[in-house]
Image 1 (cartoon, helix red, strand yellow):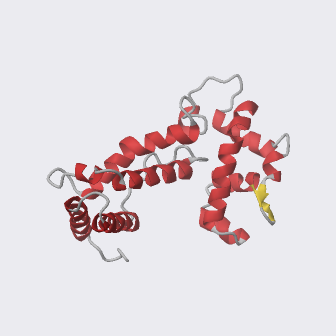
Image 2: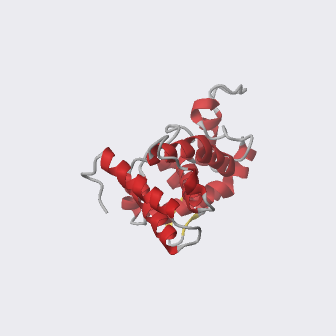
Image 3: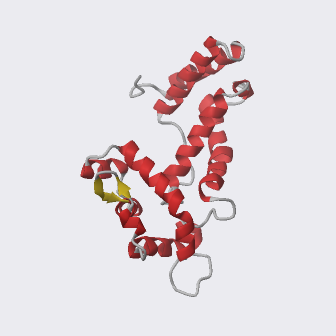
Length: 212
């Protein structure tokens, strides 16, 4: 399916048709499942999903966004939630992006980073936190990864790719290198890189807080 030449009006019409088709059929029916699957595929491929708070949570943004989108799509398929869409009030993308921004992205922040620690890796807020040193917490996190006092960040690497260790990947990510460029550099799939990085961030979060 391609959206290269699809106008906003035609996309909105297609999404509304699929949403109303899903609402028409009973729960657990094959017809509803098919309509919802096509609806989610169309939303994802449209490129119209918002990316809230870009520029924040730099080390963890993609993990938070992926969690939020997965939970959003799960919500659309679960129970009778699709019936909460009212075509008289908004377009499907407006409704979906509202849910993503106001509910699922904030919930994902709490899940990925932890309640009360939402700002640990968010540069824009860290500058306002008092510190005995003239360096932000964000910069301290980067410095801790670079210093790697116990050698744990450089030793944790993708199997058979010692060069693709957590320190090296994190260094590229906070320097703004896209995943596709990292993938091309080492010849490792983006999905494998992202999964490894996400696992490492979760695993090493307590150690990073300890260093801070």
